[in-house]
Length: 140
Image (cartoon, rainbow, N blue to C red; front, side, top):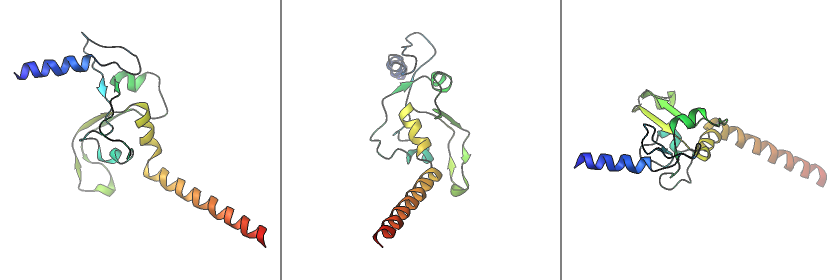
C-alpha cells in the first residue's frame, strides 16, 4: 500500500510543469517542486516575509531551473544546514531544509527583509517631515 501511495505521489509530481522551462518530466529523474511559500514547515525567517499568502503557493519549479536558468536578482533556492540561524534566535534550532520559491515569493523574501523594511520606514518618515516643514514654511 505504501509503495502504491509513493508511486502515485511521484506520478502526480511528474505531471506538473516547471514554470521556467515549461517541461513535464514523465520519465525523468527531475521533479518540479512546489513553491515553499505558505507551507506548514517553511523556514521561519522567510514565512513572515509574505504575510498575505494563504495556503501553499501552487507554482512548480525545478531546482536546477530556479538556480541557474533565467537568473533574477532574487535568489529562488535556499539550503540551510540546520542549527542556530541568527543571533536573534540564539538557542533556537532549525532542521535541515531546502526551500524553493517562485519569482513572486523570491521577490517578497528580498523586499521584506527586516533591514530593508526599517530603511523604507525611515525614508518615509524623512519624506513626511520634509513635506511638513515645507508646508509650515509656506504658510508663514
